[in-house]
Length: 465
Ligand code: F0G
Image (tube, rainbow, N blue to C red; front, side, top):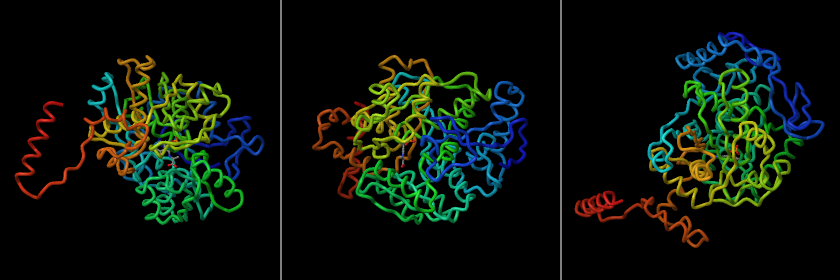
């Protein structure tokens, strides 16, 4: 595989191979369904030349690599402006990097969260906001890599099954790259906001009478029958791009690892990608200590939690997924083995949180002036649990990965503030405690008096609350 030169010493842009996570078979090529031709397990991308350099990786090389990545932030070249391709030494190499399909993804902010710090009692609490990507979710960091490789491989069509964000991202990158895209989503189970993105970007969008797991099963069969390139996170190029979240995070922290990174878990591609990045950073000498990576799921979509508790991490425990956090409404996560591996390797934990805990955490993140979609809020809700259990200590540093933008699911937010979210559900009584977090819109006569009265009332509520 070709590799181009780079200004960074010793680490070349990366030759790569596909390795089966089950039987370890290494190959130059991957089949259409990105499964091992021998044992059918998932593939991951490896970089054979790193195994030579890893044990004796020179410190000077590390420092110069870090400085190269930093300097690229001043560059105006197309690939340097991408917060993903800026880290191209740790990504598979395109034949021509300038041919990458990019929307300037990555480069997302790391926010301090003072209100959430007060709520949790964790002073060093940060939020890495992947919802600030071009299509509003972390999917863009993986999509730039995988869509670029799809085009390089000569495909005309790309396809995915999705709970919404993958489809929005894929449709955008396909459009930018001159590719056609096919979206399979569960009918009635994804947010209109995400669906509207796929429509506008020109995808052929199919709403199937099934759930996400059903869509993904169908896609896996489709790619063996039709010349479409699948862009779900089963595709290992996606995970390579999503890895850069962790490289960028560590750069933002001056390469001082936080004690904990907490991420939502659905199909489990993202946690696997972040974990892979952490292990690679340690092996390359970029960090000297591993943060603990923890995965949080919704109680109603807790396949990984159950797999670890009831299946000892060896046997997948499927569930019939149900949660209002529709992005993670997944019962049969494809990358569960990869996620179990990185949880064990980093010493992380896995927890589940209730619908009411998710709603509360989402409102608390909103009150920071940041906001996120419901699936992202499981991280804060999960942190509260991990603190109670003593797994996270208040004096430790914690990074929450917020995966999607607040505007991704406006219906959820509006229903929450108008009190409709849990009405008529088993959560109605429990959710009454969230009243103080609600800010419903107020319909008024268009008079100055009415507005001033409302202002005064609100001022009093604030001073008392
Ligand atoms: N958060 C958001 C906002 C998501 O959209 C997803 C997954 C996750 C978390 C979970 O990440 O699957 O890598 O464990 N959304 C996918 C989709 C499945 O189709 O958009 P994961």
